[in-house]
Image (cartoon, rainbow, N blue to C red; front, side):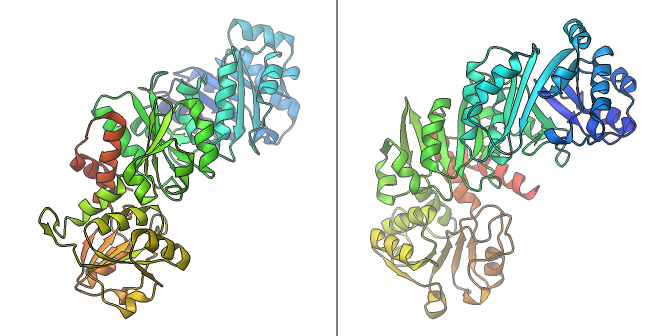
Length: 494
């Protein structure tokens, strides 16, 4: 079930929002602690869907700071009035009384809740057992995720329990436990009525749950795929891959995994049997040590952007290399006998995973490559592996280059006013390629156009590599043009 919390500050607005939420939600939660001048009778009389009454005190993350006896009296009244559900805090349930508990068995279902806004502790099963002893109908355990692996603690808990349990992680790291609540086994998940009216950190707008994550279509058999990176909130990968899964008839879902330690992540998330991953900054190189096998090209490059789960064996691939060359092909012929990259002076900014893939791709076409990086040692090591030159960033001022490639995150959303090099370093005869796709046109590209350069954005490269990933996961090649169209529409609508 999907529950939308109502956090209006008065009864009239609450009824309005409740009516709107009832069009899409299975359950509506009335957060009384947000409201002034309560009229519980009127609120319940205007319900169109089952309602959870919640009157959360400040100590449990709510807004109520008044008298505790008055708050408990409202919860008892909600039970007597026949509210569908009443959420009662774990340290309050003993104050509700036997009479209210008896009434709840006839009409109202009691939710006994525990919230931890600091962490996801290791003793979750003990917490569950303690709450279950209260005789409640439903247990609710919600914690804060400080790392992506905290979601696995919630998953394990949900696999061990018999009584209906609402459980997920709050915060950005806990996003997946909200999206994948059916796979996890939670009784319900919460979604905000719209962006900006969340009742807890990490809550997703209901429109996004429907449009991007197809939450109504998910079930226990839905195969999980996702993006490993940090940050991941800017990525349009979920929009692209979930749209492709739907259009091509796959019961799959693609979610963002914000990962700090990639080795811990890979080990812990084997429990969820994730079928495949995309890999982005900063894990394209470090993830190699966590995999069972590396495809030859990825091994040669030393960077992985795609992982396939082959019956429990994790195999790493690189689709960036070919995608970058194809993207450059829009302004310079690089196929067959018309290899116009041969002998071209290419200056490559960056020395991370994307830069490695591009450098090896360019080397295959006999380009004359120079790698520039603020960390000169990383530039030297990559240049050694590729067999090319390297230098400091001011190299561009001293030397002419035919093609300038930005393979750094400088200029990526949200830092859209940044650029990897000053405009004065650009020359009218250059080809400028920026691998960033969000925004579609970076400041770097705008300034290059103004200088008369030919430009290539990151969107074509993104589309080519995403299509190749999709084929590795599913065996089917999606239309690249479709990927680029979906991506462009999403990015320009932001």
